[in-house]
Image 1 (cartoon, rainbow, N blue to C red):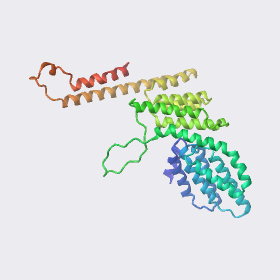
Image 2: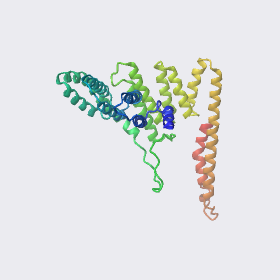
Image 3: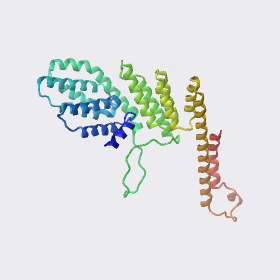
Image 4: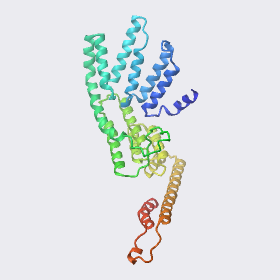
Length: 349
């Protein structure tokens, strides 16, 4: 249990994964299983509120809202006053959930309708009428989120593998870009999504709530596009222009850690350090960038050399009886050098 708690303390707060938050909540409920003990229930309740504070706006967090509602429903009420408290708590939960574009928002709305009408048909009409515009906005937003994110979050097709070896967990980890058409489309797709979130499609009046949604969108984009400096720079720029300089600097540092040879991120970071007169930091940052570039150059040269040597080793022997034009045709090794030398020159550039 201690190991699990250490892992949660290290990774949970910064996680954008609803699945990890579900594991955390399952752990809390399993270690606090005395369902009728008020203190135990308070611990579980605080865990749910903690989770919703961090991940509750994610469209995939609907199951967490669902579990929390069921948890409150299962609470024991011995007096009329306790029953009223329980109903008020359920109402507040439903009212919070149905204005968020969750995957199960329509189901939650139907449940709220039944819940309110089961208590009082007169007050139900008022409550539902007040919430209806925000719910409809959330439903519309969910459709747009699906349009924007579904193509970006589709799992890549797994390569063929030995069925005798157990399948690894499907973490869908980010990979380095090859700048294929699909890579470029992904960049444009994530940029479109974060810009859409910035436009405040839910018409949130609370600036803190809006910042939370946009910040979560950028965190999701940076996690998916970890090796694309442009996405990190957009996240940094948004945080900086939103009056969150500390958050902006933290984003740049994370981006530089993931993209050690990015001119864009390192120069942006040093620009800020120069304004703040942190000259030793400027020096060490540029030193780190230069070292990373040297390492990248060495790795690329080794890769080209190995590919050329492999081509030469597999090349057929020269046929001296062949026509001269055939003998002078470029070899596979020459083709590799012609293809990869511009890549090398660009990095040296």
